[in-house]
Image (cartoon, rainbow over the protein chains, first blue to last red):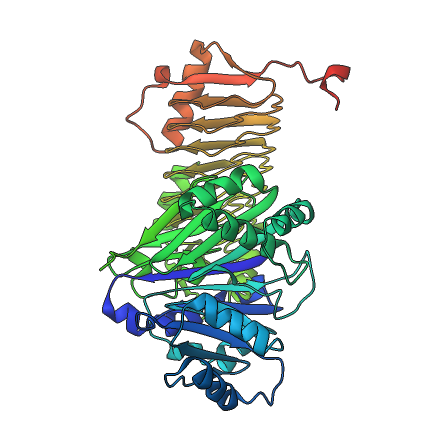
Amino acid sequence: MCGIVGLFAKSSEVEEGLGEHLAAMLAQMSDRGPDSAGVAVYREPAPSGACKLTLFSDDPLQDWDALAADLRNAFGGAPEPGVRASHAVFVVDAEAFDAEAWIQSAHPELRVMSAGQTIEIYKETGRPEEFIRQFSLGDFHGTHALGHTRMATESRVTTAGSHPFSTGLDVCLVHNGSLSNHNRLREELRREGIEFQTENDTEVAAGYLAWRLREGASLEQALDGCLDDLDGFYTFLVGTADGFAVLRDPIACKPAVLAETDEWVAMASEWRAIAVLPGAADATAWEPAPGVVYAWERQKV
Amino acid sequence: MRAEVTEAAETTAVEVVDLASTPLRELNQRLHDLAGGADGPRRWRILNPNGAHAVACGIDAEIEIEIQGHVGYYCAGMNKLATVRVHGNAGPGLAENITSGTVMVDGNASQSAGATGRGGLLVVHGDAAARCGISMKGVDIVVRGSVGHLSGFIAQTGRLVVCGDADEALGDSIYEARIYVRGAVSELGADCVEKELRDEHRAELADLLLQAGIDDLDPSDFRRYGSARRLYNFHVDNAY
């Protein structure tokens, strides 16, 4: 069992309160996933030509200002660390791939949680309520966000094994369920050059999506591919720079609820996570059909 | 029987419980305390369920409950004698193992609605998701909308009425339950076949629709499905 939440703002009021709403939704899913929690928040796009990295350090004494100085020397500009608990966000004057490659070679002790223009991923082990407090989730403004509470079944309880998983620039995945063919698929994807850092089944689904997107598939095509290539139970929520998409496996063992008002679109494992949103009582609510991709995207400006 | 309860209840005050301020366990305990004809309110209104699990679960009393809002898992599970009406949607396992009484939902029900139900009536005015009536053992289920895949799976007895469409594997491995569908069936499950709709079936359907408060549909527009009884005995070709 795990809990999933997603919120897509359709009004500036909901964008302003995104973190507060996300925190309330995540707290409701706490008993579905008491061992870890994580969120992906889409907000404050990096300027053109720059990128945004979210970095994780397991060293409580990590000197993020020193890293900012290193980044300045390497790429110029004036990167400032946006520190939240064990994570820090940097806007770097470089292409995301170059910045990520530099971190991996110059600071292998750090882990790149997300890279792109707008995405920020934060995740940690421990009770979701504690995560919400540690990472000051209520502060976030943004356009849309995903969240996950984990009850581990397939692999260890670690920060790296928590969700969301980055699946490429500005793309991430959260998952409720378990995959049964992840070991073989992981080996196949490794041969395609996809790297894995854990034994986690969801990381394989994330790697699969990253591979399909890299090979030119649209998000919808990549998700449709899951129906053929992934064996197991899943409700997936995928975040992109412009919105999010939902897919349930054809057997649909894992729950999902969608709801929409003029102000927002929300997805959650259960209604009680949506009930905390303003106007929820009058929302149009339904259960997504199995094997069907549902997607919301904001208008590209 | 049901009409008498309503008339008698109208003279009784309505007990209002707001789940925004009252713990769910306290509510359920008060409802359980009415078992065996104990004194207490006969009409209840429950406010702000906000998707909570197991609301009004395990009742054994001839009472009426109105729930204002959406409920989570297992609402009205194991219901006995009570009439429970949800003015909203219901999560998975609605009225699971109901033995008698009536459970009605104005909106949609998630998967496994009426699962293993042994008696009573479940009415879903919206759609029911996958596995509606799975392993039903005597309950009657009327769905005004459509049902998801594997509905009526290993259904043993009782009636499942679907006014809309039914998704894949309807009635898979069904025993002696009867399934009526008005719309399209995307695929019948193993050993489930269409059967002739005779007068006694039209009469039974008319009665079930009446009980469900549906008066605008003609029983003759339904098709009947049931077991071909080919899986009753072991057959080596069915083994893997």
